[in-house]
Image (cartoon, rainbow, N blue to C red; front, top):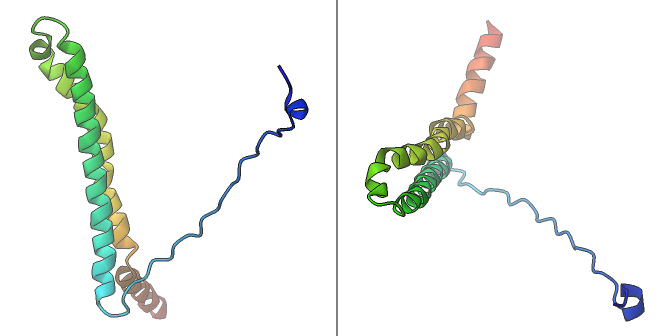
Length: 123
């Protein structure tokens, strides 16, 4: 077997590409709050969708394994559902906090709370 130097081929080094972070663009009008809220709702819906998918995948694989035994899928029904919920619930549990975080990050909400803090400082 020939080495890389003998064959004339040098091993390739990986090229790392750094993508620029895309800055979000919002309307300057009152629609900005709706756009930010919609973004939070979308992220939350995706999280719940992921939880459902993970749970269903877990259930399907557990059911398939159970079905190899006679009446196994029926006998293991509750256990298989339990496995699916154990997988899905921790993922879904993050969704309400993600939604509240996105609301807290909204400019209109930040402005309200900062204004309140400024008013308290004047007292």
